[in-house]
Image 1 (cartoon, helix red, strand yellow):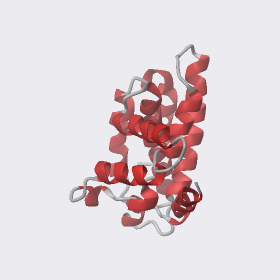
Image 2 (cartoon, one colour):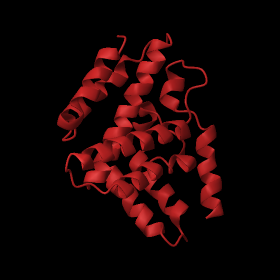
Image 3 (cartoon, rainbow, N blue to C red):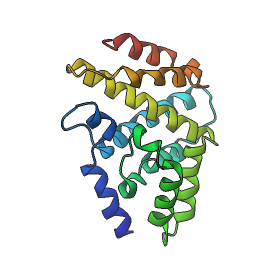
Length: 181
């Protein structure tokens, strides 16, 4: 468990590379991103449950906490690098290594797979929260005066095509309106 916790600490020092490559000095860390993904997941999952949607909030939160843990081993690979490296395969291998020997290691790995494959409602929700968080961050950077971030807004198509969009249309549409593009 200590080895996992020490490895997870790397996420606090690891900048989100996509922002760094776009000229943003001192961008958010992977841990910063993961925290807000977890907060978004909590808010969205509770909202869905309150609307009668069958969702396991605890499971969704576990997935959100675990979703970027593999990056503590492989770093935050930008899209440009993913053309040359199979990020999914590398993350899965890193997660297996991280969870090896933990009592709940197999359970955690399966939760991570649900996120990667979007094979459960909770995995899909965390993927939605992950994309939503990235757009919120892009908006914040754009408002701070950084340029060259328009490519990140293509993720709006993913959000609008999601089964969750009807439930969070106002949130996504308001974010789109606030984009200072």
